[in-house]
Length: 123
Length: 171
Figure: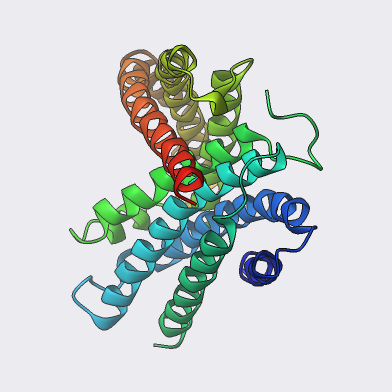
C-alpha cells in the first residue's frame, strides 16, 4: 500500500510539473502498482479467510465500510487499466496529456481506500 | 509488439493478467458478500490456503494471458488483431479454468492429507476417486466457465483500450 499510494503521489507531482522523467517513472510505477494491487487483494482474501463465520454481516457498520472499500478497489482497478495502457503508449511516444488527471484520480481513490481500511481495522 | 525492454515499457501480459485476476476476485467478493454467503464460504478456507489459491489463480492467469497475447499487436486496436484476441481469450480462458481446477483439487487433497483433523481418515482410494470424478466432469465445466470469463474479461480489456484512446483524442 505504501508503494502504490506513495508512488502515485510522486508520479502525480511529476505529471503536474510536466517533468521529463515522468514517463520513465510512470512505467516503473505501473510495474510495481499491479504487483501491489495483486498482493493487496491476495492478502485481503487471506485475512477474510481468518474471519470465517465470524465475518460481520453486510447490514453492520463494518459491513457497509467493507462493501464501500470493495467498490473503491474495483473503481481503482477499472481506472488503472486505461491508465497503464496510456503509459505504455506514452513510452512509445504517444500523448501524455491525460496522465496528470489519471494519476490525480488514482491518488484520490487510494486515499479513500486507506481511510476505509483504517476504519475497518479500528472498528 | 510494444514490449521491447522491461525498463522502458510495461509487459502487457503482466498488466492484463493481474487485472483479470484482481477483477475476478473482486467480482466474486462483491457477489458473495451482500448475500451473506461469504462467511460460510470462507470458513472452509484457512488464511494460508486462501492466499495459496489466489496465488495459483494469479500464476495460471498470467501464463494464459501471456499465451493469448503472444505475437499479437494488441495496442493497435486493429479489427483483425481484436478478432484473433477474442478467439485466443476464449481458448486460453478455458485452459485457465482447467488449470485452476487442477490446482484447487491439489490444494484440497494436500490439505486433507496433512491437516490434523482429516489426516487420520484420509484414504488414497477416495482421493483417487475425487481426482477421477473432478478430472472428468469437472474439467468440462471448468473449461466452459473459464471460456466465458475469459471472453468477458477480454471484452473489458478492449473497453479499457478504447477508453485510453478516447482520452488521448479528447486531451
